[in-house]
Image (cartoon, rainbow, N blue to C red; front, side, top):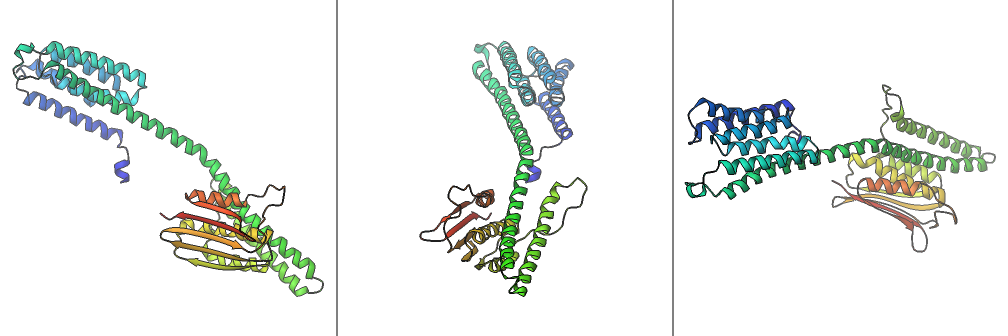
Length: 374
């Protein structure tokens, strides 16, 4: 499929044009019954095929050369079909390679020359001897040349659009990458700092009376901090100077969800975690980040609380749900809130999915995301 969509190399296109030119000349000289058997007219038919062979190398000279040679061919009435075919083939690269206004001038010139020469070379309507009416011949010739120009103009427009789109994507890529890094860093920092803050508060309260419990909280802070530093080094690796070796630490995925639930439980949020179905590896990191941020919000705003986190794949659609029974208000009155919900929504929209988050009736807060799995 990719081979068919790939544009052939220029040398192959020129070779194909040369083969077509030779075939046109052979067919014209061998099968046209009215062709006089002298060297001049045969040479003209072969010469008329030359613009077809060089039309991609010199588009404009080849097109106007085809018109002039076609006039000579029609003048000796060697072949009335070949000049129109050659003009149609020669106008295509003119339309694809030149601005529309410039190629339109070539088209009008071609129509006038082709039409005028055809009418002059046509026999008297009273002695057509099986020939179609001149108006029909002229209309067909103009239709063929005009259709070739239209196809070339369309191809040129599509190529220009593809080039602009590629440029836009290249310019947008750094911004998208910065947004991705910011989103990842926010998730890592927000989660780790929320856990560290809770654990630090526990250590400060119990260290004097229960030193072992305080030391356990300090060890948890150390473990969370180390893990966060590893993840930050991984994300910031894309910003290193060219030639440096990126961090090979794998991104977190579904296998890390149980440890996430365990850390939340140590911070006062009991998490009932369930994973049903097969989640593609390409989506595992996004699923983890959405669940992580949702649970982090529960720890930050609702602890102590109970939370239900589920990841499921049903009928080709992935569903993520994180619901808690804490206070439904997540943003203090008059506050602007953070970037957590925005990041979760952006991750969901990257897969063309839907995202909902808000207080539940009565009490609690729910986060729901879903998207189709290709």
